[in-house]
Image (cartoon, rainbow, N blue to C red; front, side, top):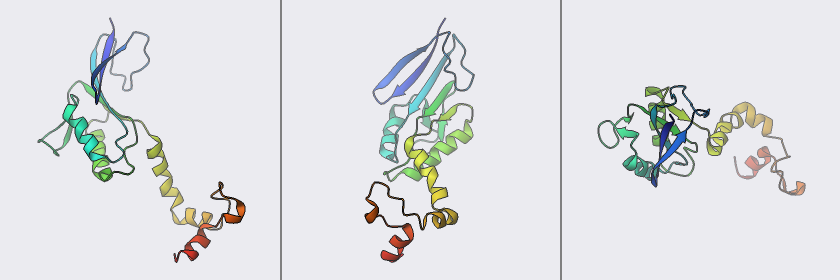
Length: 163
C-alpha cells in the first residue's frame, strides 16, 4: 500500500503519493498506508489579503471563533509554511503572530522552512547592534559594486546625512 499526502494550493487540491521508499516524513508520524493531509503555504511576504484567500480555501487550517479568532489545525493534518513570511506587506506582524501561535499550539504538526527573505531579516539583529554598527562604521569596502572613489563609510554617510 502507498500512503498519500494532500497538499492544498491556491488552485485547489493536489494528491501527492509517497511510496514505500519515500524519505519525506517531517515528523516521523506518517507511515506507509496512512492518509495524512498536509497544507502548504509560502511567500505571503506580509500580504495579509493573500493569507486570507488561502484561509478561505484551506481544508487544513481554520479560525476557532470565525474570522480572526485563534488559528487552528484540523485533526490528522500537518501544516508547512514554506518561507518568506515578511517583506513589503502591511500584515507582517499580524501574520507572523498567527504562525507563532500555530507552532506553539501544534509543535509537532506545524513546520517552517526558512525563505531568503526570512534569512535576510535575521542578519539585522547582528548588523544593527552597537557592536555591528561600530565595526562597520569605518568600513569603506562596501558597497563593493561602486567604484572605490564613490564609496563612503557608514560613519561618513551619517555625518553627511545629518545622522
